[in-house]
Image (cartoon, rainbow, N blue to C red; front, side):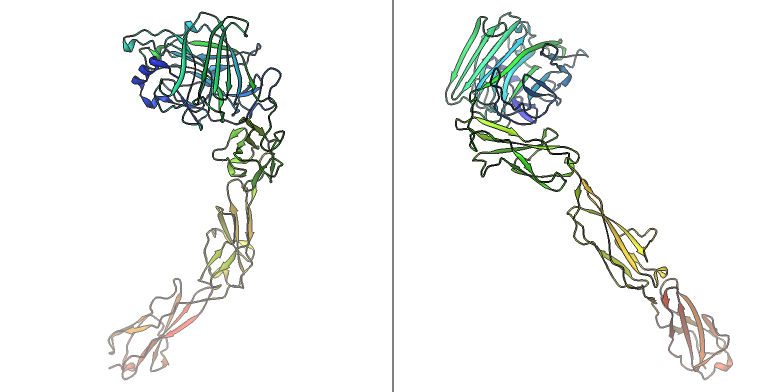
Length: 553
């Protein structure tokens, strides 16, 4: 969004400012598209600016839909700008449906960079009847990036600025011709404005000619320039703004200070009958050629691809500026000759404006044709590879390969080409069912704005049988006839089935196949040991013997 300065003027404005504070000097105005020099009458530029909310008098415009200053309660309603009607008129309104929460109105050109030339507007409003809290901002130029004065030139602003009762004064409605050169200073210090009394004329025509170092303002009674000249103002000097990327604005709002009752302001309406702009340079010579070329866009309109603006010349000249648009709206930060398409661009047309200076300092912009709607990008993807020991009980992992940065992976493991239910992680522990089978993994890559891509690894060698964890058993107990010995098998692979066989001096004891064995008289003078046999599906069977005991007493 742009920052627009509150256009309060003279000593009256200084006193108002004292009550609202310096922070109120800034108001939020809209962000929008770009462009350049055009004209009215017989020399209109072919460039109306990017598409906005409506077209009027050869320009594209957008209604203010965001809230913020200068309206005292920060409320603006786009519905308060209506038209153009069948007569080609725009109507702006202050509304207050609840009686205590008024909303203002504002609209602005989508184009930027009008520059030197003649600006004119015809307004249907007896400004002497304005409520003391209402501010008719009328036509003004503004560029949020052209500090410190932001190229604010006020052609026909009118208000009583709250009426002045808060200061023991009575302020009538007045109009002003002027401009700001330093919005960081107080009114009267950072601006050059001439106030003049209003009249009860129902229609006024205002004209302003902007030339290097000079501004000429004229206000006429009636429509056109044949009526009485009510005020002519000439402002000259080094502080007169120079062209930048200014837009044209019209606004109508409510001021919150100066002794008025802003919350209870009544509806107020202004009708704008006409607007025109005639460039001072009807036949411009651009830095990059005798005629400003229309830029072309090179590159495929796919997410992830880079688009490049080209003017068809070897050099765009010093000071050339670029602005990229998505569906007619400016893309924040996209101000270089190239633009990398992102997921936000998907399905939308992208365009670019190129602005350069003319020999006499005019800024002239040209817009490219929009691209086709941006298509999904194609992910860079390579086949994954399986890592780990291919035997039952071991864990397999995966190396994804090289993919587009930011890709998120989904995994699926396969057993001899058949997906394994629930095996959807980056690792997989081989089980008995995998023995003898060949394993693989499929990775699906997902990234917003891109078509999903899937890659499958090569298959592994057949899964080998696992190796059981098989510790050496130990025998415990008292080595005396009548006592019980116990085979302590240790911690085998979980799930292993164990079998026991006891031996007397190396000879199998028939029937002694339990975990425990009660010594008998026949065992005296012999040694005992136990054999533990383990088996588990998918694993190679294992046998372990304990060490022999001492001789039984």
